[in-house]
Length: 442
Image (tube, rainbow, N blue to C red; front, side, top):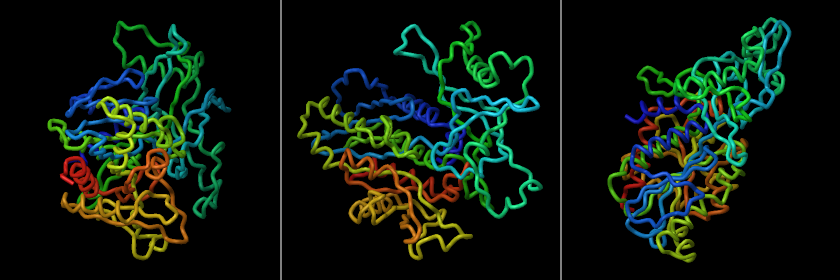
């Protein structure tokens, strides 16, 4: 049920900006009201549904409960909209011999770079247009949906050691080929021609056409155009880019809108941050005080006080939803001998003695019981003690908003590959657990 929607969501969300747009569109259809973060927040009452965005790449939704925030706190699921990729640099075109044009790129996040070779790639992101007010330029989202570029491997005949492991240069090896120059493309360049063509295809026939001179700047990224799909003898596996972490975004979104026609007992919050893959220390990341200020504003909009804000935090519970590592049958030695979650075994609670994850025994028990009530299995992950692990949203967010919470995610293989592997059953399980979290009487 939810997996088919996930595949469509992944295909429509090649970058953070489009993922947030698609979440916002779902919220709009479910009766949520968009509020500009710079506007005065109106008084709120039980049943109100509203959301705000930051930087076009993060979104925060609230379904106000019957009990005040100060008395009951809130239940929050947080995830992140970004995934490892390659950003297009300014002045990106490099014209080579024989008229071939390639684009200059910069690595974003911790990608497995070799997986990006020999795939049909394209561009997505946002384009910034000139306006009469220099403080308020216009933003247009861009999604070129046809294969436009490719990062080609060097033939094995010139690199006989390629199957023995070869170091890759981010600056030399990871530059995609875009085309061969001809007269039509020479004036404004290939990149600007492609961007203008894509933007103009989405506007009305009688609207002014966008030209290269109208574009001041852009945030554009590469993505693999191959659609998300199922595979396996019983179609039990998911193969797609950006499962980490858009599968958790999708599960949280589905849970958030599942009960939009009823008033929850406790306020529900969905927080989708950006820039987790680069440390979260941005205005739209989990290290920002933005969410804390939104919670405080909601408390005040309910007629509460600063004391009620602090009480709300103490009563709250956070699920930090970021995918976990599934046990890989070819590399069992990389996993902890007693805690290695499997595909199809259900959501995973993540632990780390160095506090890279927010989970502790108390918060783990809370989430385990949520899963039990939803009829969902639950697993645990701890790193092999000789293998360094990563971190995620929970502990970063807790540094500014000291929430009780758990770090969890669905198990996936090939995390940070251009194409990751997950489980159909796990996505269904996780969504049901999130629905129980938002709707359950706990």
